[in-house]
Length: 133
Image (cartoon, rainbow, N blue to C red; front, top):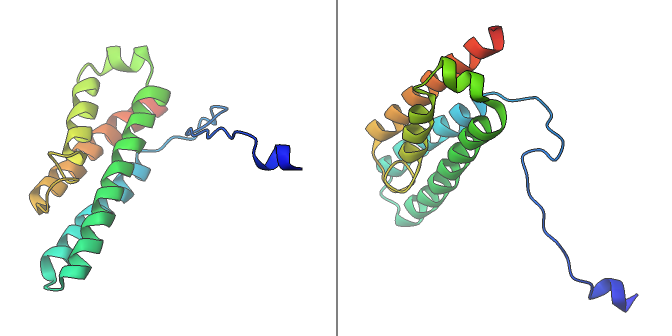
């Protein structure tokens, strides 16, 4: 019994251990919409505790945006997609940077949140075009 209690544990994390084939840029968009809404709530509040909580949540959601975009980029999009849409690498890079420390994760700028949503929409347009092909 004690051997099991003190046995080393291994933490494993992945989008999918068995590729499920279920991908959708809507996941990134929903988180980005949340980021924008939380930025607005933080800007509208004079309560320092509320603003602190909002900023923490915004940073967490921004990280989730990056995660969902990276899952699309690394697991869904394949070489034929990148050949057909050569701007895809740049779009994903720009979008993840807009969700990162120099973007929504590190600012309370609504314009940056709008730019992030626009980049996600561009990626989604390509994503859905590849689904039709």
